[in-house]
Length: 182
Image (cartoon, rainbow, N blue to C red; front, side, top):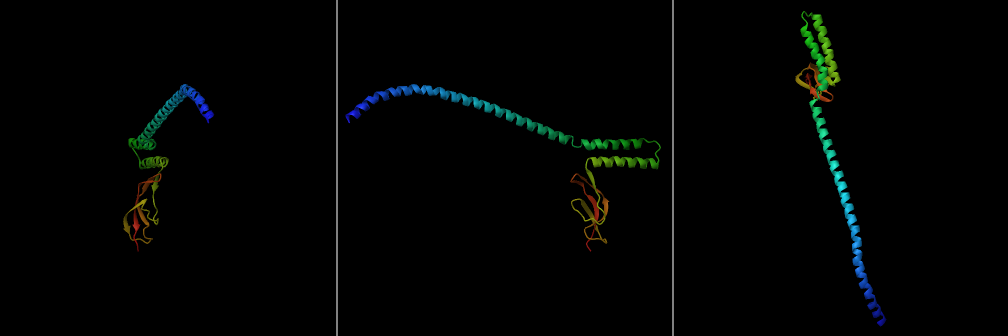
């Protein structure tokens, strides 16, 4: 037992000597922490830079999209206007004729109508012209009167005014009279 106590006493100076060595070892680990801190700060600066660039890019994309939408609204009718200018020119030329004949006026109106029809087709402006006997479609037709007729109820009897659609959107319904129920 005494031998154990002697060993413990003799080990104490070694433990005391190890304590200052451990204290001296602490500064050796501090540069590792400083290196980690500086690496982390560098990575943070890099990520902050990447974030700021991404934010600026998003702002630029948003601004360009707003400009594109603004231009689209502003110039949406440009194509239709370009198609309508020749029609106006034709009408103005018809008014300049000094001695028009019925035939020349009719020919000019027919040519102008062809130009107008081409402008409508180019811009997807389509006529809604139901035929008598067609089923009344409240999405495309407006019945202004219900008249007795020899055809099925709720069908078109006469077309008073044709309608128009732009692409798939109704611009003006066709105004019709409908057959009354029997």
